Length: 149
Image (tube, rainbow, N blue to C red):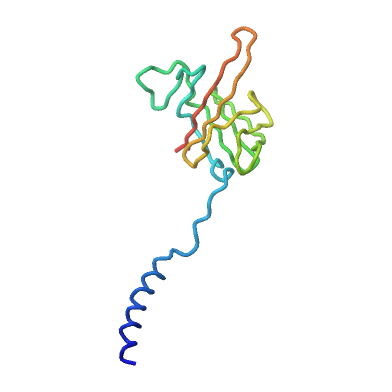
């Protein structure tokens, strides 16, 4: 019996730290919808791969003003888009795939569909799309959004 006491205490000294080191439940991983359901503002806009707006402004001055533009995903299906002129539109939106989305479809507006540049995070949402004009031809837009403060 005396020989078992040291083994018992060694067992306790090893087991207790192992049990207390286990953190319990893992934190819930947010869905892509939960990540973007917030108010977003523009950090950078590229048209035809040229930066036309950056916030804060870079070494090149902004040639267009997207300071008032914003997207507010208010729920899993509703959004408010604020244009550069301050006008806002409230409508619906949806991902093409809730687990691994590659595009967002809006119920109104131009464009009505935008592609998503992965990854979607709590801190960054990058969308891009191409418009067609009979005067200027195609123009590609890349808009980097960050959470509004």
